[in-house]
Image 1 (cartoon, rainbow, N blue to C red):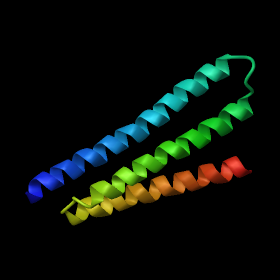
Image 2 (image 1 turned 60 degrees about the vertical axis):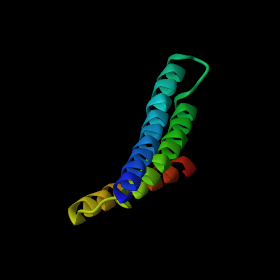
Image 3 (image 1 turned 90 degrees about the vertical axis):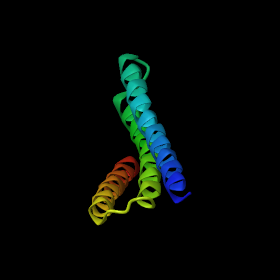
Image 4 (image 1 turned 120 degrees about the horizontal axis):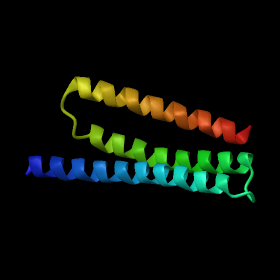
Amino acid sequence: MLETLSLVTRYIGLSIEYVGLFIIALSVVIALIKLATPKYDMESVRVDLAKKIIFGLEFVIAADIILATVTVDVNEIIQLGGIVLIRVLLGYSLRKEIIG
């Protein structure tokens, strides 16, 4: 029973992580298309892309937290904590860039 719950939790975490990565990838494609269109300027595309990347990163961070609940190895937990820290700092720096 516990193994099944762990497996389901892992699949949920990975699914949420893929949603976040899909949001980021799609946002980059949309930004590139907007850059090719003369009606959008670089600054508005850059700010819009940063907001969408932050949104996608929030999904990925949530997935990392979910995946940490089923991790049993201390090294994996430390590695996951480092990854979450890097992603949080990246999100923070993107927010600061958007605000100015």
